[in-house]
Image (cartoon, rainbow, N blue to C red; front, top):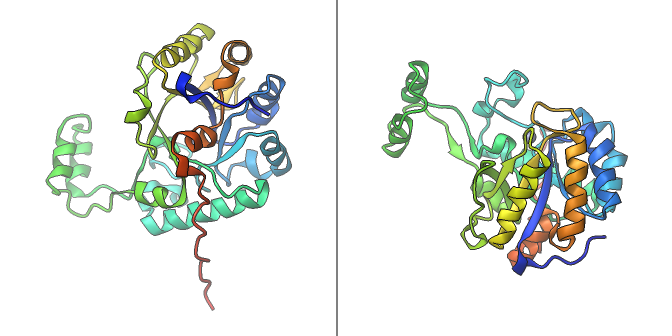
Length: 288
Ligand SMILES: [Zn+2]
């Protein structure tokens, strides 16, 4: 559906997180009207995913990527929507592995693809819980000082189960999107990218001018611009106005249509082995 991307001139990927109704109702039709494709990072437990599987399959058939965003969207327990079952504190590396493998299998049953990218929920690649020392530092308000980093560096956080799960992601996916950028940031050159922490910026209440300025700055330095959306026309606290989104997509189509592609497609061109099939997971043994 999309024109071939010209990496030497930079690239642009739009990604949409959390399987919102607004993505199917507004975003997919706007993108399809302009013959542009994007990545939708869906977590399988989302109501907006399970009740509209046929619509998500149809989106994939139009060239959009269904990216893996876990099943339960594990996150920090301090967030209001996090329950005991999806507290990232309680996750282990094997539990995360099983969840990501299962999500890959189910997504493949929907779109027939055996290669897709991943986005860390809340852009956080650490699972497990803090130990006694960091817990104490957080309780007395020293969370944002240098002390937690020093505790990690010196391995002083007794009782901690915290671990990075990037190594698990590396085994299961060709590339993964993280966060890390602000509206005023310059996107680093592609040769400095870690393909398992592709930098992106979260779009929240930006104007068309903001969107175009960020995109043009990235393209001027011939890098890969990754814009991370949640709500579009509603559906999430992090929102992009629908009229703004429509205008921005029309601008993309008019000015840089051949540079816009899903993250999976750009990753496949940048890192030529990234089309390799996802490692087939070992079946999870069941109790007898
Ligand atoms: Zn998310």
